[in-house]
Length: 599
View 1 (cartoon, rainbow, N blue to C red):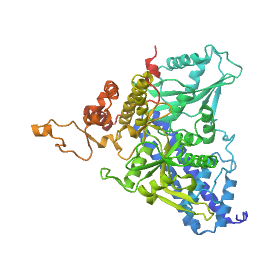
View 2 (view 1 turned 60 degrees about the horizontal axis):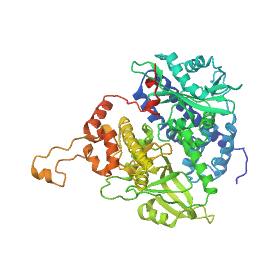
View 3 (view 1 turned 90 degrees about the vertical axis):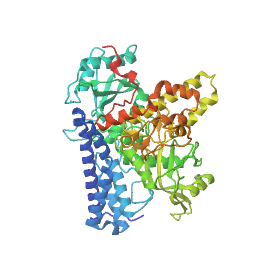
View 4 (view 1 turned 30 degrees about the vertical axis):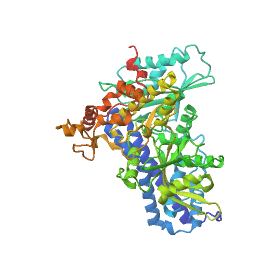
């Protein structure tokens, strides 16, 4: 350890410059998030998509800016380590009364690692654990909004309270029938309150800022009555005439988990104190890791930091070994997991079979596309890491041999710290939520036998969800490329999610064609493709033989999703997207929508 002296003016100046860099980052991040309200009010859907995509780049741009400033003004890379240690202590002092201290600590880590080229989290120059508590932070600015508002209705005033809750968001666009919409919400609430005695503490707490994503805005809160708390969210959309409407009422942890799913795009929320929003959301979804909540709020770097801390904690309190992940092995990605940990780790292989015409950089580009795109609840979010160190004794020998065979450039086994502990260092990997591969899920149903009604229901649900997943991807301008069952997984909520991105393309970049009619008997009898095929030509009618070999699967698929085998379906969606249309994709079942409720 270095002596903890705070007598270096250079150290304080470095700390102050880094704090200035973070404050600039969060100011720009928050401003862009706040503009989402105006884009929603003006129905600027393409602008909303563009802003969501561009905001993801903000963090890395600000880190690079800060690194350049520190190198230019202080020759930061040449400073002695004692100065850096002192800079960290000064920085902690600057975090007192800061409203985003946890984010600022992560920013310090990012900048420091860039300058010192250090690849380990466990050192004296970064924040391995939080130095400043985020508990009970509230803005002390006179004009600042509180994190949430509390309302205290009676049964008689509940309807008017709901109207007040919505009006307090001050949306600058008229509701078509706010009175009617809030009566629908009230009716949904009454099913939970009708036979319940309202206790002295009966109240509704609602986060002050709306959550914006795609074409929707969401009011998020909870109903408190006695010892019971019921989370809820109200989606607000534009109707066909361009006026606002409350589209549904979502209640309970399950609904909120799906709304904040790791397979959806990040929200835009105007937050002065993000940790207070995370704390409130954790009370609605106590099983959801804080890392995933930070991700959902667009604070992906903080999500990565918390995930890694959680991961290290799990390693310290577990003893099982990493292994090759169950399922059919991919041609491009090598996948391993830790049975006790609900995530998978994915490496890009060093080489691929001839039919996979791609490169490492192209695959990374596909994963970046998914990160920046609207995932519509159908594409798993990924955390990307470099230079990750694992204990060697936690890796099975079979896994080590697999990596040495297929991705030797991505692994180093050594005692890099010189402490006698051999480590496996993975150069680059992606981490994503573990799901049951759809082919395995289907096989379990097949194994149960056709006579088992539960197995038949499982197959029907699975095939129906599979087709819905593809249609949601199409609506988001995504062609998945390889649509085999093994490239999709099923979540604990029963949602089918796509997770193999190496062949993904924008729908608008593909050319969907019908197979031409044969011109001669030789062509008709030929076992080879006799017609010309361009590099991005797709023939939907040829999907069937690869996907529908099982008769029961085929029957369900043709009943619900036969249009996916017709080029016209794909051509129509492509044309509408090219014309600027943004499709609606709802994070809840269509039956939940109030348009289906009595007037």
